[in-house]
Image (tube, rainbow over all chains, first blue to last red; front, side):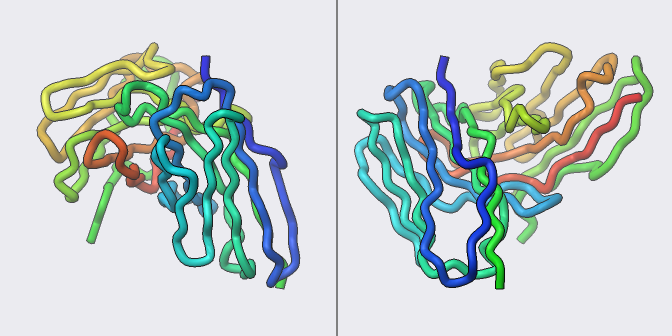
Length: 113
Length: 112
């Protein structure tokens, strides 16, 4: 059974710092991996989707990498800002590309001014 | 641009009552999903609909039923609510396959 783990559960950094969020999964047979952001009391916002054949995706200050063989993904946030404070979740689609996502429990990020 | 709209936003039920959570999307997406989010458990898929007219079970379907009313609407029904179903319920939609999912703001459901 696929399991997705995100460590640490919480992270606090000063504004301007570059940071890396980690995601690991137990079954390397995935079709894609997605990173989401969740603000308190809100739904999830899709940040990046990496296909299994890709190594990384970039959007603005965000860069996500994928290493299927080791079961790991990282989300790199450059020059962090207080507005980046949120919970970041990763999810894998391992079921014939149906969109049946298995989520990690998230990393709650606080960026201090 | 509404995206994914969920109603109601909050609801309190008594054990044994029934209710239907509504979800509608205006992005012409093929696939729709229902998740629940619980502290310490993360998000778990309840049911999904790959396309209009089809539905299938997710990870935690027991105690729930769904209806894909048309391409826009996907409802989740609790026939006899139990305290263990207290949760935040999210609806999502996507074009299908390897496409990002778009989420609503959730329904916060408490069952006493």
